[in-house]
Image (cartoon, rainbow, N blue to C red; front, side, top):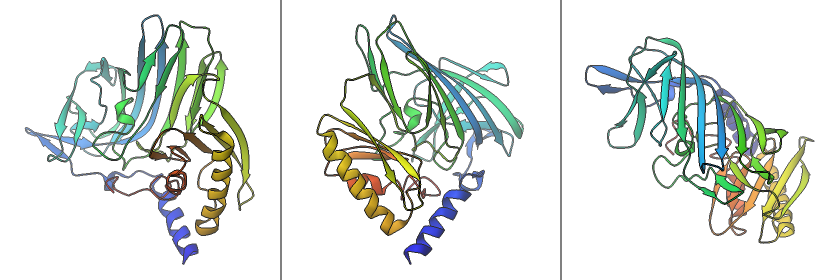
Length: 310
């Protein structure tokens, strides 16, 4: 039974990497025009943190397709600074989804087909500035509405999966910072990184934490999966790194016995405070919730709810 569950789960996860417009909510009528849910292909975002101005600005280039003509729907919580669609400056508005949630849309009717959009927005949530260093995290929650990556960067609802590339640069300081995120990270120099995320990620997948280097005790190790992969583990916490690392390996062994190979390329554990939140192959968690959060890398952040409304 467990083998069958794993097989079904992997099929669902694999199939979700394809266009999922058939899983989107119903399109929305705005006057005489329909607002249309889109299929995002790629998002390339650049974030520049400027300590001279205490300001973080993101610029995102988005390629997407839509099957019908109408206003394209996406989501972003902060009001954009600037938006262009196919090279023309335009505006966005928000609208209610039958009182259930809110989405943002481009107030310009587009034909069906492929389009390009650029969005600039300021990041101000979960960020703190000091004289020569900063802290920023893309903390998320599933306990209330619009608490995924749309708090920080443009995205789609959770039905959609897309390839994301993120460039990060800090200017105005020589103090070295540390980036922990659940993508493929390449250092480009002091306080500058390029991150590639898997194309199966959705709005709820991303783990992102930027801090001053050395501020939080950190240990690294590996775990040999039952499929013979050496999976890198990053544990960072002020509450006992060895304790968290040992427990992480113990939980991974139990989960693989029950559900099969770990479904991600890494494990990231940030031991902080009470409770916790799951991400793809990563978690912010208390020690007592560690097992609970890691199982979510199979269910909720491995096999995903099809409509994103579970």
